[in-house]
Structure formats: structure tokens, C-alpha cells
Amino acid sequence: MKPRVLSREDCESLLSRERYGRLALSLGDVPYIVPMSYVYSGGRIYLHSRGSGRKIELVRKNPRVCFEVDHLETNRWSSVVITGKADLSSEMEAKMRMFDAFVGKDLKGHGGKQFGREDLEKMEMTIWEIEIEEMTGREGMW
Amino acid sequence: MKPRVLSREDCESLLSRERYGRLALSLGDVPYIVPMSYVYSGGRIYLHSRGSGRKIELVRKNPRVCFEVDHLETNRWSSVVITGKADLSSEMEAKMRMFDAFVGKDLKGHGGKQFGREDLEKMEMTIWEIEIEEMTGREGMW
Picture 1 (cartoon, one colour):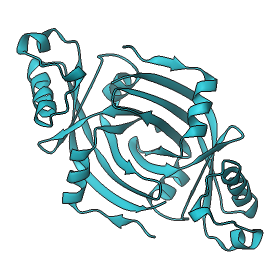
Picture 2 (cartoon, rainbow over the protein chains, first blue to last red; picture 1 turned 180 degrees about the horizontal axis):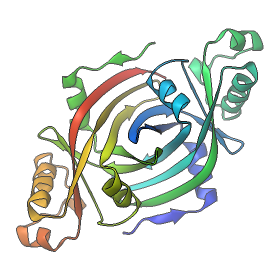
Picture 3 (cartoon, chains in turn yellow, green; picture 1 turned 45 degrees about the vertical axis):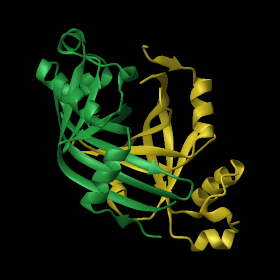
Picture 4 (cartoon, chains in turn cyan, yellow; picture 1 turned 120 degrees about the horizontal axis):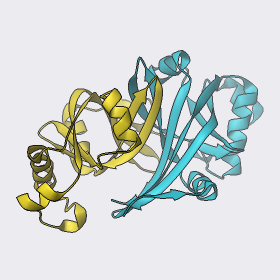
């Protein structure tokens, strides 16, 4: 079966249902992928990470990213592929936006703990906001 | 919990257990990902696809790839990230190597059909063999 293109609505539905995706970065045309938990909210993909490490080094040099979310079953698959740019921040406002998005989805990130403003201020984390430039969804049979 | 590095043996065990991974390609430093079924055999990753389409166009211009396989659970994850080069072929010998690898894994690809040499010759497909240059595995908690 030839893969079928998903509507924007189906893409958003898949993004809202899933919790984990894969982020691809590239430097010097050498691609790199890492799995990351995410939340899709307000038309953006939110990720979070430590403030250092390979993916941070790469994205600071090239903010262009590709983010993929899929739902794979034994005989069929569906996936959404997003291209865009990542905007990184460790500012309080970005942390609040990400936590609001997680709470809005009832994802109970970080062991279901509730975080107040003071807790968030103390947390050393980098928030990634992916501005979506292109979003393509497909489904098919293996 | 800080992610733990997986041993080569653990990486190979994860690659042997799973069936689906994600392939990242890059052109002009714009990364692109697609989910693909695969088989790991003889120290190589085997993929197959049609002979045309976006991923084929990209890999023909830049054979450097990153292939990621993961096992994600609610609270923990493990993943293997491979960097290397893809070698594409539609020759009979490459098709045989891939099918031998699938049969060896008892993966029953393509609906569990048995394929003879004549069937394989007629099948229009491109075989991707990824020569592994670097393989890194990690596991951690979300």
C-alpha cells in the first residue's frame, strides 16, 4: 500500500496523543538523532534538556531541526515529520510556558510533581521551543 | 538519573530485539527523519525502500546517515544511535543479503511470504546497507 498523506488535523491529533519523539540535528551535513519527550501546545513543540551536551552544542551552531513522532504497530505505521527552528532559553518565562503546556496535557512530567515559581527558578534546564515551518504526516503499511 | 552508557553487547541486543528505527539524513545542514523497518545483521543495518522519493534524493546527494533505535517505556528509555554511510543498491546480491538477514531474524517481512530468486529479481526495491562507523547506546529515566 502506498503511504497516505495525513491531514493537518490528523497530524495534530497524533502529536497530541504521543509523548515521545525524535529530534534530528545536523552539523557539517552529518545528521544526529536523539529521542526526547515533548509536548505539543499552541502550535509549537516544547522539549527540555540539560544545559550542556552534544545536542546543545549542535543546535547552538545550527538551529535547524527536524522532529519526528510516530505510532508504530506490527503491520501499520503513522508518522509526523516537522521541520523548523529551535529557540533555546533558560529564562523563567520559557520554563513557565513549558510547564503550563505539560500541565495542560496532564502529562505529569517529572513524577507528577507540582512545581511553583520558586521550584522552577531553581531548576537548571534548557527549554527548546520549536517553531514549526513545515509539518507532514503519513500513514501506511510496513 | 543521569543516562548510563550501554555496552556494545547491550547495543547489539537492543538492535536485535527491535524492528523499527528512524533514519536521519541531511542536506545543506537541514536534517530530515523517517521511520523505517530494519534488520541488524553481520554488523550492518539493512533497510529497504522504493527507488524514488525524498529520502532517496537526499541520500544520493549525501550518503552520511544517522540511524536511531529505541525502546521507550513510561518512565525509562534506552536508545542506540548509529552514524555511518548508506550504500544503496538494486542488485540481486544486495536483495539476497537483505532477505537472508530478514529470514535469519524470523521477521516474516512482507506478510511472511517466502521469496525465491525469481521473485526477488522482479521486485523493484532499493536496498540500503549502513556501514556503522560509530555506535552509542544510552539508557535513562524520563
